[in-house]
Length: 371
Ligand SMILES: CN(C)CCSCc1cc(N)cc2c(=O)[nH]c(N)nc12
Image (cartoon, protein in one colour):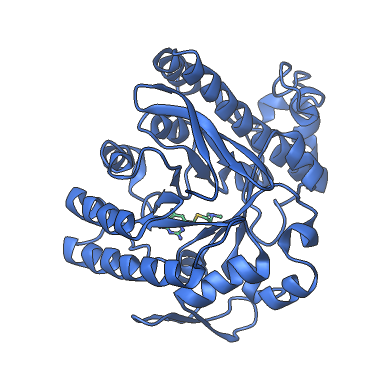
């Protein structure tokens, strides 16, 4: 019996909508998880994040083990208490961030060893240590196995090596995690853009058995088209009665097209990172608020939104804040963008429940990409 029941309430084609029930609260799927890398969703308070409708946020093993250290977070009561977020948290296992953020790093069968991008200190991350950090020290609700995300493009032989290492680390992660009744462990499918490798990765993960399955190795530069081609088959290799989490994705159109192919959960830094740089995501596509055409535009980003950042502030004021490099601009636009991503997943959940997802998918693309 899985520790977290996953109840699929409706399907429409390959799209599903449901609820992942956890001790800290229900996660409505399709779900977008705001990224809270260093124990904060950047530029937002936890109350603002909650206000957007987010049911779960992401934390990061890599960042928190370096600063303030996982042991200190533990001494301070764990990640939920430390950052005052009492709903579910999913933590990534750290390997991906090591390869993309740290200085010198070495990857062997045993571990990833690397130097901190913060102070150059040396660190070792094994599947066992990553589980200890996530499950015992940070206290996250959804724990990710340690994996190797192979860079794109990859030769098949290289992709196979990474997939096989990740599968061996999946077993070590599961053995280290053991059985727990208030936390769950997700395996991560690898295999780059090779169907046979993705199938084999999935078979190995299913043999080991996980409470949920992530699709890794995408959103690494392959582009929307190539990602969708992998998603035409990759989700279907995973158990249909467990959540499927597409890591690091993505733009609004990526979420819609991935939901159409059977994905349930997403995380991406895009809404917060682009918000800090003046890009607002809307039903009509992204807009750059620094553009002079908004200088005296008194309309809000979305008058129909229940998010104050979307409903109550004029584009002219938001543009002013960015031109003046006022911190409030970054706060309001991060808040608006996260609220938009939550409104998008809520609209998809409703469309699937009402059997009209294909129409939603067509209408969204026409309006959002229409230009
Ligand atoms: C804040 N987020 C960007 C971090 C969580 S998602 C990071 C992340 C992104 C992508 N694209 C691929 C992978 C992957 O293959 N494996 C792991 N462990 N993490 C991944």
